[in-house]
Length: 333
Ligand code: KG4
Ligand code: ZN
Image (cartoon, rainbow, N blue to C red; front, top):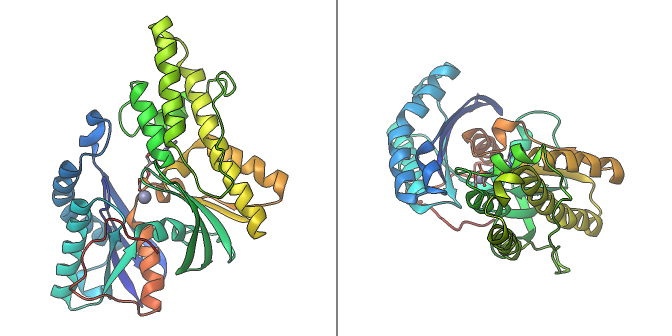
């Protein structure tokens, strides 16, 4: 029976999970609230919080799964992409644990793990499928050929969509991470109240820095004329911003589905928790005859359950790494 402890520490969530024979038994996540007031993740504070959280989180994951250290067959960790200091905490911890227990070590790519979150619960997508992976650090369309065989066919050339949500939310006065607040206020607003431009490029890549500037200039002009513009129109502003970002995401996803003739479509990453994106995806699926896959909420944002799922497939493939392994903040696959 293979039992693996997996650790995630790439950004601002310290998480540990136990997986046994491909079944996630526990998924413990400690969210770092220390960043809220700064409007973004402060790397140094993230590393320190990971150091404080990692032992309690691992302890809880083991205890709640009814597993002892002796039952473990491997230890997995997120090698990248992510913040160097944050990754270092999980990497060092996993290395020491594996060394002390004399069991194999498994390095996991965080983005690959977001995709493999689709295999934690059923129904699972059929290969090949497309996965729109949208988070605070990434926006990618991934062609998934098999569990460990993936190709990025489109990605952002500048900001991630989560960053566009969070930075706009900051201007609107919301705490970090602001995506969830825009989502909340958008539910009572008119998505067509304010119009913003589409992307002009013909390939499958995204760009969100231009649209972020368009939002900024729009607010500046409106607030100059009416200082209360934002508070008076918050619902409509949030709905229009969210609608624009979702429209951009969907345009390229539809294009990718047509170019690759694939109608198995999944979404993953923190932004896939967005209720507007979920509804739009469901509507598009009906129109285009897509089979769509959206992970359970707890497996959308950063979590070690998805790292554990990736580790399970790597364990079956005997894809282990040595003690010399170090974090890769810009890891690709
Ligand atoms: O995958 P994730 O937890 O961490 C990264 O790897 O970045 O994604 C975090 C991102 C943040 O930008 C956050 O604002 C966004 O996911 N997010 C949302 C929602 N929930 C989380 N964005 C829009 N609507 C939401 N409901
Ligand atoms: Zn992530």
